[in-house]
Amino acid sequence: MSLPASSAALPLPAARPDTPAPTARRSAWRQRGIDLLLSWPFPLAVLLLWQLGAQFELIPPQILPAPLVVAQTFADLWGTGELQDHLLISLGRVLYGFSLGTSLGLLLGVSMGLSPAVRDYLYPTFRLFAQVPSLGWLPLLMMIVGIDEALKIILISKAAFVPVTINTYNGLRNVPTSLIEVSRVFRFTRWQLLRRVVFPSAFPTIWNGIRYGLTHAWLALVAVELLASSEGLGFLIVYGRQLFQLDVVLAAVVVVGAIGFALDKVLSVIETRLLRWRRESF
Image 1 (cartoon, one colour):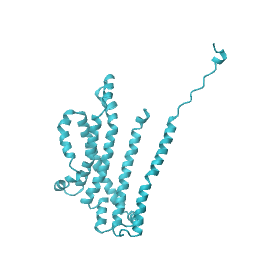
Image 2 (cartoon, rainbow, N blue to C red):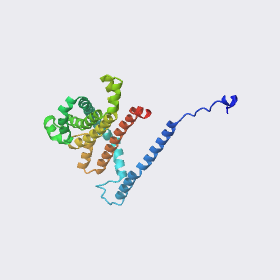
Image 3 (cartoon, rainbow, N blue to C red):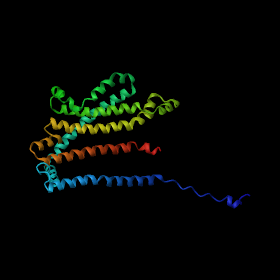
Image 4 (cartoon, one colour):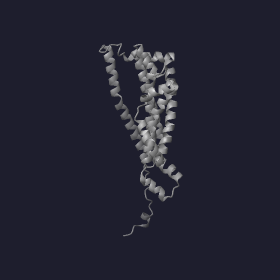
């Protein structure tokens, strides 16, 4: 039975466009809000226990000052500019050391990842070098370069150099073989293979190495300033301990933790923007 001509001519209803992006975006923001709410109870509970312990003198105030005392000390150090001076010195050291260590790590990691000959010659020695903690080189370096800025920059560079090298090497070595085979089907040149397949595939792992390198560089900075420095946040901690001013120590420790968290967060935001194409491709 055939349909009437008028019915056949009726236009079909237009397909409604799918809009998963706004929904997914709202879900992502909702999940971030939930994660943020869940992350606050524990630090607030620790702060409350700290305040109660100080208020009822469960721990002597000379050992554990009250949170308000630490906050007032922080405000005093900031008001005099002393805290900013130490902070800028520490950030400058991290910037120089991290830049140097990351550059050398990327160079060595790419060389070992792309060249079997370089890997066979250098990888065993590198693994041996990486097993020694940064502070393990401190006595030897003090004999060679003294205790000036060169010592701090070298140790910070070493702390960043190892994770960047390892992650760069692993990222390049673990590129899926299926992608390599597809590139051969398309007859990519070596440069096209590296630019369009190898480095984009290895980039997330390489970037994780850079984030770990910055974290290790920041930790190494504080450690070396604790041992051999006359300025910086690490020195401020030692100075407060020597004078038994635990409020100064805790204020400096809070700043160290906050700056380390902020640096990692900045790299996380940069990573999200750089890798946006991976999410849009699905």
